[in-house]
Image (cartoon, rainbow, N blue to C red; front, side, top):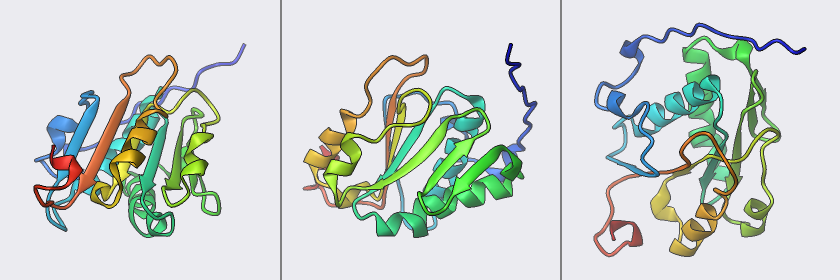
Length: 177
């Protein structure tokens, strides 16, 4: 019989921008985080992603319009969050594949939308994709967004979520609607 490994994780609320603390456990299916550069939205979402994996039951797909830009943005923010919370021993970070796997088997997968075929078959090693974080969501087309929402399929014990983060936009952008 395999014994489950339990961790008593205590994270100080001081590491979070207090504006975002109410959203740590928010299960609203569609979430929008917007603000100017240096508003802390990406830092917070990276922290929340790490804590969600530690809690179990969630697998993330993190996307941007162009794959190359992910490494220098959301991927690095998540790696920094793991390090800042002193959780490196609980994660396997595969830089070449841009995959982060938690000790409990849940994963963060990264993919660019510059090749839409790649996202059609992307799947975590355990369970299903429960969360999609679209970094710089204003870069993507509405059809790409619709294709992403189709990746949230299958049974899950957690509410599936799409989280979009971006800087303020023009009123004629599809996200504004």
